[in-house]
Length: 578
Image (cartoon, rainbow, N blue to C red; front, side):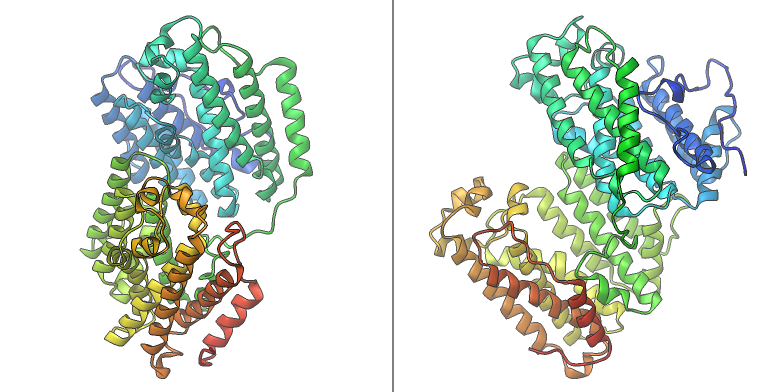
């Protein structure tokens, strides 16, 4: 097997070099717990990231030079070409990724975070910090999951752990980051809330406001670690499972130490007996954990209502549909994740530019995510209309620029047309239909599905500050619009909410009926996956109505047997019942 360990870099003072080794990190890197055959690949990833991080943190370099060197690293990583000795980690990682069939996406996402560091960006809120960690930390966990062949279901817990580790590191280094680099990763708004400001980080001890910010940050870290606690039980590989558990226990120990000690006064670490005890507990935790039943890794759809109707399609159509689904998830995640509005707009604009390239016939670049390659194939094979992808992004932009709260019926219909009707039209194109009746069916069904989702996700949307219930129904139920638009969670607790939900459920039922009427009997077989989705989601709506609108935590779910049964019946061409 090729050796992917980093070769000695040039010591020439003008060339970048890593200033830290794996042994100096807070947490184990490629420990003996992971399979021996994978350790060189992990070290290749580590060496690349370590070099890029040290370039961004070099106090002797101007921001423009840092960005130029990070750009050179990315070019070498994508192309596999680089003549300068200091680019060796990029070339070695390229060889490793090629050998393991893993995308360059994870490493390139981290470069995006390091460019932000190089330009001196700060995090004003906790949401800003989470978005930064999405690029600076979470790709590490996702790379390790990919390398070990783990299911994508483990990704959310891995993200929580990686984000927690990153934030703990920021707390450890908060004083040196400020003094040496002029950076503050702790939410700057929290200093004002505590009656202080980030400039107090120059002090040799934590002032009461700084201590309050540190403790508040650690409260959020502990919440992340609680979410990450399920990770070991989701990992099949025993070595990675134990390493994840060890890291989890070390992180908890470090959080406790940072609460007990002052990171401005001293370098706070877990050492001696505390480290040994955390490792032993972690190994025991990892050995005792049992992985959950693995899920399909195809776009993370196996648990969704969509999965079985799509799974039974021929391979080419199935791949196209999963590519469309993956695109939908990607832009939806941009809209839903915490973070600054301008960064979300920028991410959506990047998808518009990607669509520009694909519709112009420009092939995906070597380092592009696999999803983009699948989309390119689907666009070429099925002539999917650019306008529908744009419509879906426009719908996500409504969420980003909103939040949407108590829209009028016309705005709600427009939103449903964009985020769901567009998917419906793309679906019928893949299924081979381009006529007006198929489009009318797709648009009506898309609106029905979206209204069903709105009713199912009322509580979760309210927590995100969103309320898709139409203003006309709220007014009819005597729920004040000023309350609905200022605090959606109050509407969820309002005694007249059932009246509004019944109105929206009736609208959804009307749209299901319109979809049925637009569907000729001759199309039942050609469009059977869409017909199956219609039948399954209509069952979800019926279950919601039967449940009522008081205990919204009870989310109705369809059994796998029901999903498979409906999908098979439709695939065999039987007309829908009911």
